[in-house]
Image (cartoon, rainbow, N blue to C red):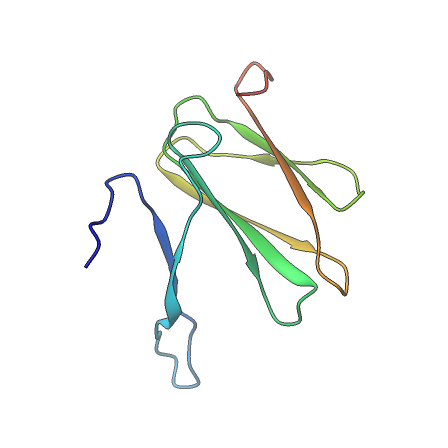
Length: 114
């Protein structure tokens, strides 16, 4: 059995069933990170239909205040990130055959974080 690293984060989905109760759906999903800034974890998640999706940003960094996201060749959209600890979910629509997501991270001065 593998050992869990202290900087790993996972997402577990709990959809509401017809009785109004919440049940875990599928397996825990590992979040990418800490990337690109220490304390920032991300995970794109596809929905059904496949054109609907969301981008989950877990923030534990004091530096991060904004993420700019671009789907395919579209325009950048700015997403404000609350102070840590926080979890932000950004919903978007991709193409019928999937999507390509570009993400960039910024501090309070508007400077891109490495």
